[in-house]
Image (cartoon, rainbow, N blue to C red; front, top):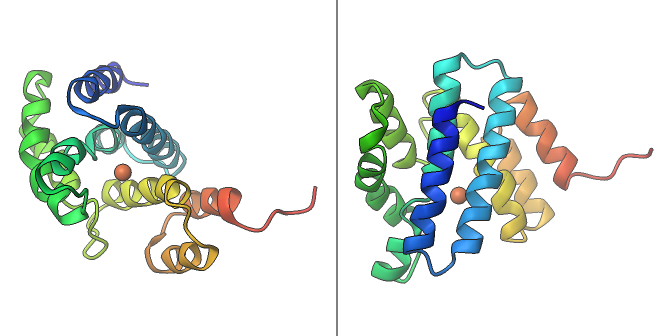
Amino acid sequence: MEKIVAEAIMKMNAFYQQTSDARRHDINHFLKVWGFAHTIGIAEGLDARTQETLELAAVVHDIACPLCREKYGSTNGRYQEMEGKPLTRTFFEDFDLPAEQLERIVYLVGHHHSFQNVDGQDYQILLEADFLVNADESNLEHETIKTFRDRVFQTKTGRQLLENVYGERSAA
Ligand SMILES: [Fe+2]
């Protein structure tokens, strides 16, 4: 793991400690999403910069959840996308990221509940990683998972992981 990612993970933990009434959930959630994103990105052969962008976005993707719960009483995706962008900018202020990379992370946080016009592997993999975790946390029905797989999942690794976690159990 790159040091910058570890730094972001530690800072995100501290952020949720300070802001979240549901910090156990929020911290466990982002670490699971990051773990899937990390794995899918490596397995799919992303270049180093895209991999880092993906991982940093995965760490902060739900940064707006505590604020949205407080302000709107809801973590609805649209609120999160809107509120997440400025929070992401502030979060990475002391990380010295290249401007282009920071913009991409902000964009990903601002679109992580949008399933159309997915314009890059980092975006695609973030959606898949988040769903791999949300399907369990939201106790989704098998049919819902299959529909989402057919409509959204693109990477071989993401599909394989989804099958491993939620598909039929194969014989030993
Ligand atoms: Fe999430």
